[in-house]
Image 1 (cartoon, rainbow, N blue to C red):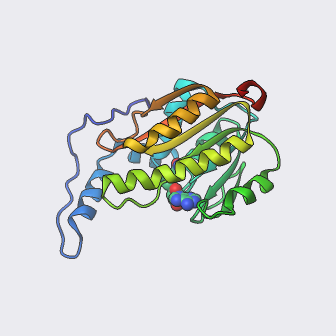
Image 2: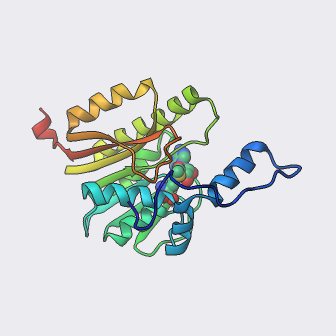
Image 3: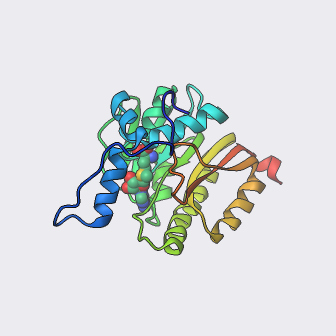
Length: 226
Ligand SMILES: C[S@@+](CC[C@H](N)C(=O)[O-])C[C@H]1O[C@@H](n2cnc3c(N)ncnc32)[C@H](O)[C@@H]1O
């Protein structure tokens, strides 16, 4: 937990007035942002997103980011996770659909990872094994839980198809999901391919969100999997 920050236990400090032309959902979003301690803390310490705290909390607990490691950060914009990984000494290749201002110590590639040729292009670009693949990729939500679950699962499965080709033995795969029934097949595959797999929801992940992460540690080499 970030020092001085308690998630989900605060009384609202700022109330946003309804104004003509702003939808109820935008007003709710604005109110939540203004009252979110992680948003304030991210602003204070110079993180580009509150999401940075999710990776920081997970790594503080499971210690998978090590200085000198090569890592790929899929769905990196605006760059919070990349900042944390660079801070911890990793060499990061960050990828996103949308542009991301440069971060010292990281390389950025703008691409739609869901395009059929994207994983292959990325493999060629990287050219060697990496120790960690992170995916915080999330398509825009539709508000329909089942649809949002299936859309994020499709990206998660693509991320793992890519990760298994590039991870070094012992490597780590961390991927964002949304709760729902379609995660069982990915979970089964990860349990086969890694020494340890767990569902994780860091304190900075909003308790009322269906978001959760799968953290797979100790990737088995091709030889040990046979
Ligand atoms: C939750 S945000 C990531 C936040 C980021 N981890 C951070 O710490 O700032 C999800 C990102 O996934 C990206 N994304 C969604 N679909 C994608 C795709 N098909 N290819 C690449 N990036 C994608 C979005 O553009 C968005 O920037």
